[in-house]
Length: 82
Image (cartoon, rainbow, N blue to C red; front, side):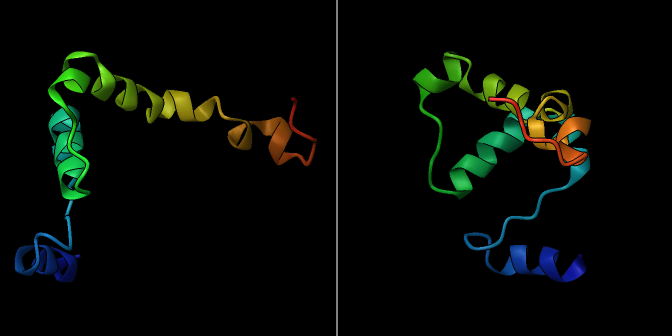
């Protein structure tokens, strides 16, 4: 990991180093940083409209567990429901 951290310091416009602790401390700020890094910053309208909170919810562990590829029926080789 040290190599990636150093690369992020040497080329901050090419390598973004994220720490789990920072994500847990302030997920909204880190998501805004990621969007900025990807050159797709959130507009003020998107921020005030709750887009960041929606993304956080959609990427939550709880939401991910609801997806078909992660449920037991799909893993057991049964066809996913339509």
